[in-house]
Each structure stands twice: as C-alpha cells, then as structure tokens.
Length: 376
Image (cartoon, rainbow, N blue to C red; front, side):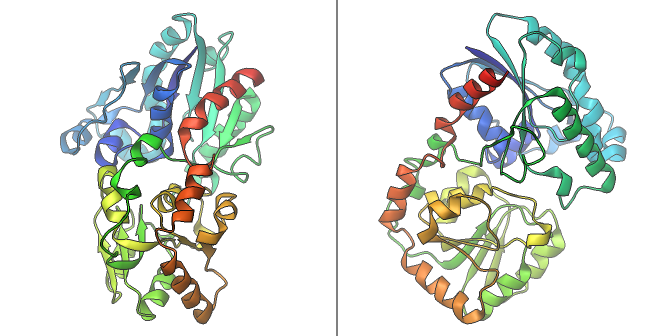
C-alpha cells in the first residue's frame, strides 16, 4: 500500500470556486479512488484571510482517507510583495508535519510534488524508502505570465529535481525533455465526473453556437482566429475566467461572439451542449500548455475540436474529429468547420472514447505508482 503526501499547485479555495478541473486536483481524486493508496495528505500553501472570506462555492467532497493541511495567513503584506514567489517560503510551514508524516506507519511513502517553485527540505527527501515523484503540470520555464525572476526560480527547482534523481512525469514529451527518464503522462479526466453525466447523453435540441471555448482567457488567446470565423457567419461562445480582462473585452466586441463568465465544473456539461465544435485558439508562440484538458473534455462530450497547433498524440488517435487550423486559408477553414458540424455527436466518436486508454485518470494512477516504486 502507498501513503501519499501531495504538495499541490492549486488550493481547496480554487476547488471551491472552479471544481476539480485541473491536473493536481484531478489526480487527488484519482489517488483517493486507487485501491493501493491507503492515505492521502494534501499540504497546500496557506490561504490568505481575505481569500477565505470572499471565497465562494462549496468545498469538494473528499474521501475519508484524505486529509487537507491548510493554514491561514493573516498578514497580507508578504504575498502582496512576493506574489507567486510567496509559496517558496510559506509552504515551509508544513515541513514539521511532513517530517512526522514520513516516519508514521509502515506503508510505502510517496511525496508527490506539483509545485514549480517550492523546494522540499533535504532532511525529508533523505528519509530511507521515500519515493520523490515530481509532476510537471505545465512547462513553467516558458509560462506566458511568469516574470524573469519567477522563471529563474522555476529553473532552480527543475535543477533540484534532476539532481535529486526524482521520478518525473509531465504533461508532454516537451515538458519532460530535460529530465532523464522523464515519463510523459498527458492530461486526462475523472471518469466519475463524465460517464453518466448529461454531457454524454443524446442531445435533443441543436446547439445554439457553432463553435465554443471553455477555460481561462489569457493573452495567448488567438483573437484573430475568432474574428475570422465570426466574419464567416459562425456564432462563437467563449466561457471562462478572464485573467487578462482586455482580451475578453476585445472578444466581446466581435459581432456573433458571446463572452460569458467563469463557471464551476458542475456547469460544464450544460455549457458544452451549447456549441457544436470545441476550439483551442492559442497563439503558438505564447502557448505553454502541451496537453489541454479541454481537448479531452470536448471529445468526451461528442464535440470535434479545432486547434491552433498540435498538442500531442491525442489528436492523432482522434484524427477524424480533430483538425489544426493554423495553416488553413479561409476556404479550407470554412470547409473544415462545415465537415465538423456534420460529425458533432458522432456515435463513432463516443465508441472511440470508450476504447481509448488515454481519456481517464482512473486507469493510470495505479500503474504510475508502481512505476515510481520500481524506479525508486
């Protein structure tokens, strides 16, 4: 049996607001559901007092084997000054608890670290028998919203991980390319959140929009592509939190485009049913996501997907329902969209999803833990 301690990137306040929608939170649920995991301890960065006051939503229902370790920071000055660098110091508050965790019980101890900046203590990592598993949820060395200082801190963390000889997984081949023996582990979904939900049922009413996007809106968004398809007469829905407000504001000025607010995971099925084709319009030069979760969401919901670039092997596996628009002239793009509108909710896509081993986390966590143990 495994006893897993997690150092996440996100927090439970994020989960309250958006649901278990990102990699580290999904893997938490997958660990809970894994029969060979005895306990999961989640050590998140302290929450600001004001975060707790204004946070909305309901806490996720976690299993009885999961313990969340969270503190409250009442002084807002350090996080305001240090911003993303604050967790480098603030996460150290958990180090005494981690030292107690690692010597408690007889199960195999696994430290699963998602954080791109915080470096665990050497004393902890020198514990005999401890498996140090580092997962790259993104390639933060080229993250479009990270400052030079933050990217240097990321490089320092990556050097540390390499020097420690950690078991490393990452979202793509590119993400793990600088880690010897790194294992590519693309993003997936939680089966329990999708199979049997309304999004997989036969749709009675036709979608209102031709194309749609769900996710965070940042300055890597390809506004020019949205202008192109809107000028062709297609209706576009864009839903998600705008981290760069000016991008959402500009999108909302385009005729035929509706920009909606952020949403919780519980609303996703209803949103996906509003459009026929899922889009991932990222400017390639600014793109750091190598395995978009939304691509898997689109396919599971029966939506073909139109991408700005290649993200990995999934589009090859689902080639009849995935296309890359970057080099397509207007005439070719219009034909691609018309062909995709025909295959929305294609029963063959549903069958391909059911056959695939690359869609859900549930079938992966057990084997990855065994791989980490064997390499350790």
